[in-house]
Length: 326
Image (spheres, rainbow, N blue to C red):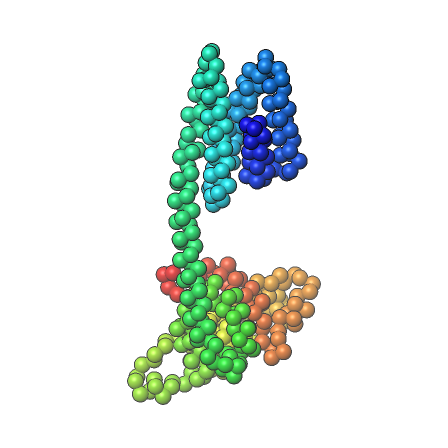
């Protein structure tokens, strides 16, 4: 009965905990059964088998403790605890058989004390995982709240209102929120202030004239683009409102390049492509640029995302419309 129970434990531990293949687990199980049956039929061999198992346990134990601690550090608590405890059990088994059981005691039992720090790592890993889980949950809740804020701003606009911002549908609005506003931490109030300034074309509203102050301030870079004639061709209004500093940087870069080099059309196109984060030497560049425009003649979000990343990489600046200190 004890032999069968031991065989089951060996198979379950090697297959489910250590993740070995079924055939390797069965091979270890078969080896265990053969040794146990042989030791019962040949009593003289029993001492050799026990000592061999004890030495093997002491050899395997540190590796199990090591693997278990790695699992704990990676956040796999259940597997890490089981593997670590398995290593400690082997260390205890080996130490017992080489120290307490035999008449002539070996100093190999001292190895057991080396594995104790691995056991002590378990509560530390559990506490660290709880802290990580709590931080992750708080971050998820915060992100969900911000997403809901954006949806509360854009969804009530309806299809007609979204079209004023160059957004085709509510689904596209959600994609823009997830791909741009959330990762770049765009401030919803700042964005809406810029939208109001763009929709008014630089003219003050009646509320501004009566109160003498603006409810939502626009950002400094936006002043270059408030008049319709000054806005860059192909840029959707939502992008101008969210990233006016990126567009101002692009205009300044192109202006300085033209003053310094007096470039032809091809070299200027290559320079502009580089600012957009594209490869100027790409033979398919023209085709990619054509595909980057939608039916309304506006840049698609994919190339605009590339544009923002290029700005961040080349300047290292914080976005003007981003939430500060977050």
